Image (cartoon, rainbow, N blue to C red):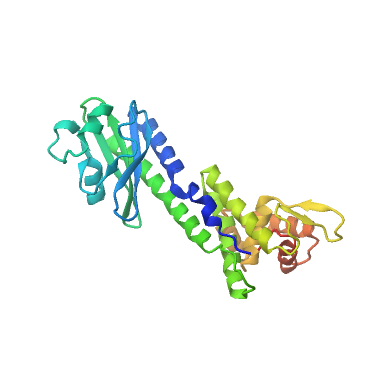
Length: 296
């Protein structure tokens, strides 16, 4: 049975929710009335404006900005912040996008690159509708918002890479299943680090689908039959997280590091999961969880 969970999270992995959060932080920290952002598209490498806050028109929505052109394109090309006090008359930039900028009434504007692994992945803009200098405090706040977005994109890249490894193998290849199990455990550890609730829920849903496909009992929810098979006992999300780490061979210390928990907390979750599953050892707990469809 094939399962390609990457298809179900393509939209969630686009990063638009993270851009909205970064723009909100930028406006709140600087008081700028207008902020907008876009990510660099693959292929031609052009920047596409996709998120706007405080806008009065749709003139900038979907605008494609080419590297080197305008303020944003200059920012992409130089990989450093750029700003102008009066966009319409500035000699520091080219003016391919004057019509859209004028339609929104923009005068003073700042553009900050979002750089991930030395590659410009997007640009955050902050703007005024009057020609006023943008001080160091405003530039600093914009840089902080860009750094937050950079970290969020790093996490999304990690999620995308893990999802690419979670295609359920058609046959019974032990090596292929081991890769799926490792990706499943890493996704469980990654999910709590994601601020976007929609993406976090999608990743956990993928984990549930993987476990359900692999489980001998066919269970897909966070429940497992008790040792005598008479009752159903629920495991908490954190108990499953810990078991997923244990299944990958992690010690309590390593599991604590991956999950951002104290080692004693990991031990407590593991003891609780073992008790619910009727297991006496870590290995028995993993086997029981797999048979219950909680782990792939």
